[in-house]
Length: 107
Image (cartoon, rainbow, N blue to C red):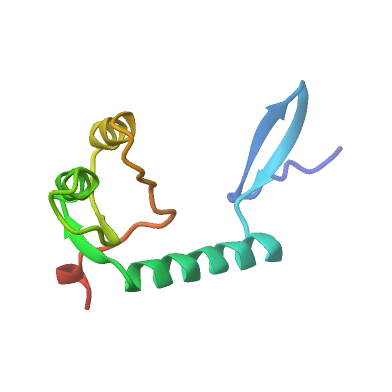
């Protein structure tokens, strides 16, 4: 008789195309870790040369797009609806891959 050994706590079963697989929530593969690190570096460089505008991101983006304000690199917060409206107006925006804390919340 086989012993009743439960699954590890960091695993869960998944089914794909009828075949059961075990998903492990352990360390990421080295390639993924390296790619995420490079992406984080790229974001940090982009943020260093842009200005935080907070919740006024949509307003600032529109003003720059329509020539009411000088164009500059900015970052801030926008709701999904605000972002969709900007895209519908032809204003180029993109979400950042990693969350950004407002400057006043940084140590």
